[in-house]
Length: 252
Image (cartoon, rainbow, N blue to C red; front, top):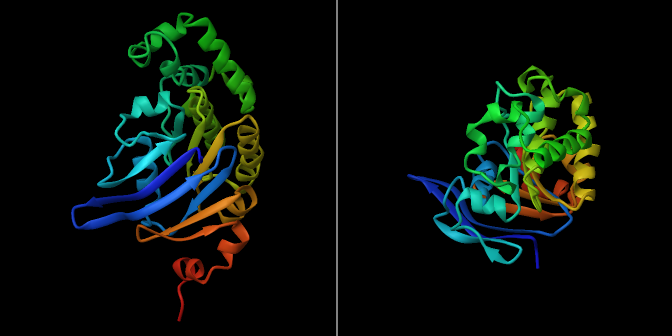
């Protein structure tokens, strides 16, 4: 049984068909990528899987359990986490506090936790603080915990966001263009971190436009174009697929 199964998912926005009959499976322990031109429906698919949007048709199963009718917080409780293409950190909070807030779904008083950052500065929850520090060490930012997250370089802000997502104890982590806006050096440094996340037992599904990054990391690549799946398979096979070449490069 796959960890994630998307079955004939469709979504329309008025007259625009953003996704049409898209199906895919993600095996536990894998790093899998979704690629495609801008407007192909990649982020729409992520928004449907995580609950930010409701599908018009189709089903989403996490470890065999149907979750497409669950609100976002219930999917998070089931082990689904994500990051966003545009980094979404709390600008007034420190690096450590940002990661601590990621634990709210696993701690008592979860509904109030995001509303009381002052409590974090006053000492917060001991186990939550300890776990947040462990995750900052994991992503290589233990020396930055007291700094404001928005004051960090862009690549390090991305690592804070990944640490915050990991604080929810996910089984499946969705990364929406994790290399967006990064320098070549920052992108190269991100690759071993993603491998460490996978080695820690967390399955990864990512959207990315940097093909060298995708082809090096991924076991399986799914290609979307105009809201439909046009190819899927090992990276080398997908790269050689004429439909993929046409979708990205065009033909005479």
